[in-house]
Length: 256
Picture 1 (tube, helix red, strand yellow):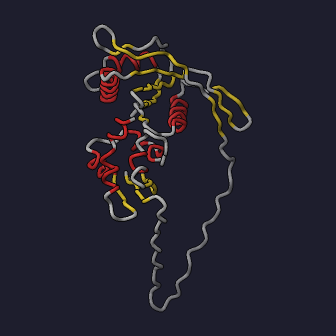
Picture 2 (cartoon, helix red, strand yellow):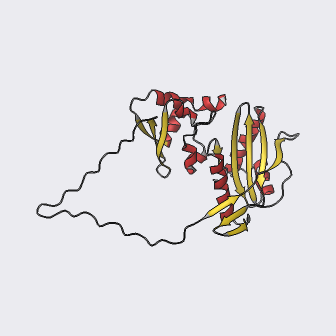
Picture 3 (cartoon, rainbow, N blue to C red):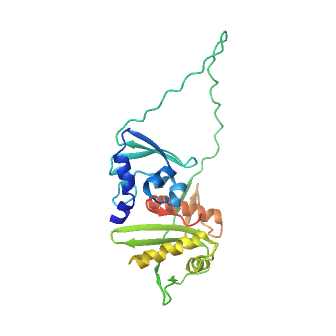
């Protein structure tokens, strides 16, 4: 927990010293303050910027300084920090002036789009704990036995008082972990995960591996069906659902 908080402490100090009650910052500006790059999930998932009050989360860096996030724009990579309790100030839009000699008319009311069938979806899935990721006799990563099957996976990086989760999806779990164990020279994501897991283990941390390979039930309207994990779109849906369920805190997606 202390390591997570100290990592984002420069942002806490920066916000604590800010004068205005509202501060719009780009992700690049935030990274310059922190001195390191934001995780991929910060650019992919709004939940990463949620004002999560749980201790040890990265959001504590701005909440502890008395600030909250809002007006997130992932496409523009910008977010607004506001002092907690400060009212959002919205500047009134100027009304366009009509050319001299003509009467200004209000724009026509938006035409309602006919309603279609609402999308109703609920799902239930259960992580299955496979075991520990550790080091073999050559100091390389060693993964628990896993099938050559499509599914979701979750690394839980457990440290002293801290927890980070990395969630992903793949068409072949065994092949994916083999790539994490011995990444190719051009496989940037596999290299990043290899270094992350090795570094955590060398620092005395613990890595637990969970997977989902089946048994996911979907309730679509009135129909109850089992999810087809061979379908990439379905795996991505479940991956995002797992990230949202995790709260988006200290979460990163290895699949970029």
